Image (cartoon, rainbow, N blue to C red; front, top):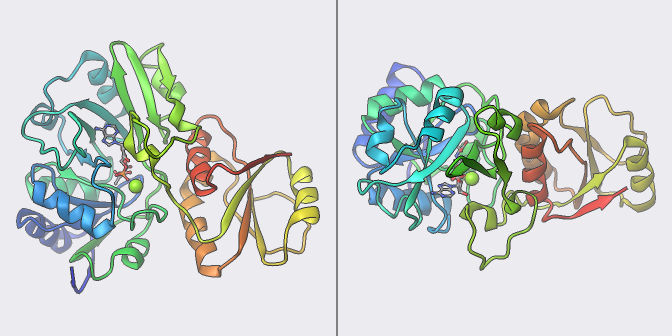
Length: 338
Ligand code: TXA
Ligand code: MG
């Protein structure tokens, strides 16, 4: 720590410097198509410790390992079952993380003590180039301070991690905007641990048996044993109290008129007609746009210092399930049915 944090474009010089730092055991923030990641050598316990320290993250919350070639799965796992190969063929490179039995080469510091490892093959060009130039798969959680919304541009990373890391690679904005879909396997069954851009219906193209884990829509107790440890942490907690209002825009308007205070903000769909006196923000027309915008809207709420933010509830299907899952956590599961 105590770094003079640089931001470089994802050009030749940027990629070269990132790779050089990673080879020396340093950690570097890189763009991916989902959110920015804070990357370190996936075979190094020391890199893992640096990542946890920079983020202020509990060390039992496992990191995702990023690859740039399918063959790298062999080095990382004891077993690459047929169903996982089919998922790789269908969704990689892309926003899908698969939890598989880890090989001995992957230190427990990377997996938060688990005997499994989450693996993802990102589609982002800069991410691929950095992984290849570093010469090793890279462990990378989202590049936010623990408890803050995930970063979807280089400035979000800078605001959270300046002074704590040497370099941020500034690539394209993160088009997907929410973190990858995380799945695990039980024979021919796919268990959805964290929803993302790859939806349950997409997964059903690979297997008829797709189970949505209880933790996706329910609050998991702090001391519970869960299949995906990330689910138990309080995530994305803005300073404002977030409340989800589940219903149509008419009901939303009535609720705000009756209940909202002067310094409360409304966050509705783009195109919603809402006539209230409260300040209002929009977060996209549809689920894909909402996924892309959600985290910057949460950061904007913090900046403006609202006491409370009422969100119009997103659609809970398709990519909307990922938006709803993140928003539920930002709202600490406060939902009002209208
Ligand atoms: O899109 C993404 O996945 C981004 C970008 C940077 O690739 N990364 C990301 O990492 O979101 P992170 O650390 O913020 O979230 C990783 C989550 C963990 O909280 C955990 O729930 C799950 O993935 N996970 C990772 N390894 C796991 C494992 N071995 N078993 C179960 N869940 C795991
Ligand atoms: Mg994260």
